[in-house]
Amino acid sequence: KQEVTQIPAALSVPEGENLVLNCSFTDSAIYNLQWFRQDPGKGLTSLLLIQSSQREQTSGRLNASLDKSSGRSTLYIAASQPGDSATYLCAGGDDKIIFGKGTRLHILP
Amino acid sequence: NAGVTQTPKFQVLKTGQSMTLQCAQDMNHEYMSWYRQDPGMGLRLIHYSVGAGITDQGEVPNGYNVSRSTTEDFPLRLLSAAPSQTSVYFCASSPAPTSGTSYEQYFGPGTRLTVT
Image (tube, rainbow over all chains, first blue to last red):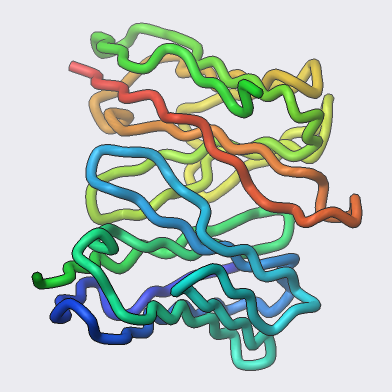
């Protein structure tokens, strides 16, 4: 049974800092790992998708890595901005795509 | 492109009533799924389908039924609504994992359901 854990549950950092969000999964038989952003009361915005054959993906200030052997993925946000404040969710699996509970990120101006 | 559409956006039901949440996609995706989101719980998988005529249970299937008669549609049925089913429901679709494409999930805007 796939279980996905995100640590920390909440994080507050001053504007401009670089930060890392963590995602761990118990079953390495995943097709891919996807990171999402969710603003309060809104839907999901896809940020990055890492296929099982890849180790990392980059989009602007975001970089996501995947290590299947250790069951871990990280989302790196460079030069954080107040607009980055949101909940970040990771999801992975095979036919069953399982989500973590998310990390609530607050960037302090 | 419409992408993934969900109807209705909001719904209030009384305990014991039945209803169907609609989900449709126009991307010819084989894989579709339903999630519910409760405060502090992330998204939990209810049911999923890897193609027309094929459905399977997710993490929290009790109280929900699904069917997949076409590639485009994946309705979620609540046969007898309970207050514990108050939640936000999201539908998602993606190419099949064996299709050789990116298998990226696309989400609908959600349906906010309240059961009183």
